[in-house]
Amino acid sequence: DAKTTQPPSMDCAEGRAANLPCNHSTISGNEYVYWYRQIHSQGPQYIIHGLKNNETNEMASLIITEDRKSSTLILPHATLRDTAVYYCIVRDSNDYKLSFGAGTTVTVRA
Amino acid sequence: DVKVTQSSRYLVKRTGEKVFLECVQDMDHENMFWYRQDPGLGLRLIYFSYDVKMKEKGDIPEGYSVSREKKERFSLILESASTNQTSMYLCASDRAGGPRETQYFGPGTRLLVL
Image (cartoon, rainbow over all chains, first blue to last red; front, side, top):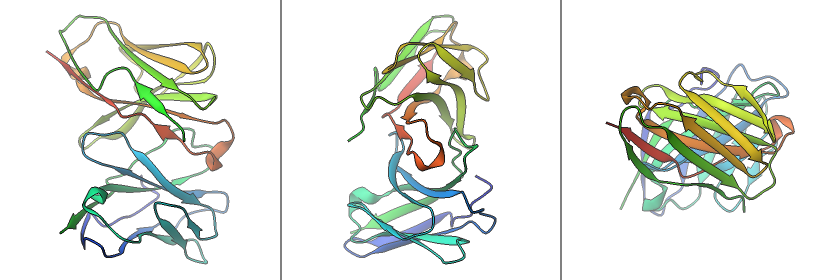
């Protein structure tokens, strides 16, 4: 997705918080930030989304900067099962389909 | 919890066969989608449907057709399978309502055409 930039990979220690950055400097006012992840050979799994406020659910927290040009997905206590490709997506009202970029490959190590 | 299920996780077919992939969602979603995912090409939309019996072509509809006779079910048909249709096929659904509505995916069907 050309609207977002993510690091290609990152490692994380099991039990620690994983902070995944996403840059979306051209985001406009009505566009939402979505995060999905995809574990090898499975369908993408929805994690969380937000417009401007920080959001938290049972899986993760989403921190969006005040200018909305970047966000961070936080997995509070990473486990080995969190090893996956994580996709940050910006959606507007015209985006009926989802476009995944290359994402960030997160490897959680014991 | 939203559940999107797909009829098969793995499928092996021969060139020229007609292939049916079924998808069912249990959340009364208006919209349903079929994507394919290939390494280096990301997710590409094949078809989507915004209501029963309604369909729209996506980015790569050639060689595929779809059917939506009931709201919860969306079928993808490969009329005559070819080796270049070997791929991971993903079904998704969401509620009509724009970008605030989350799109949920099924587990995927990995299709191999020999």
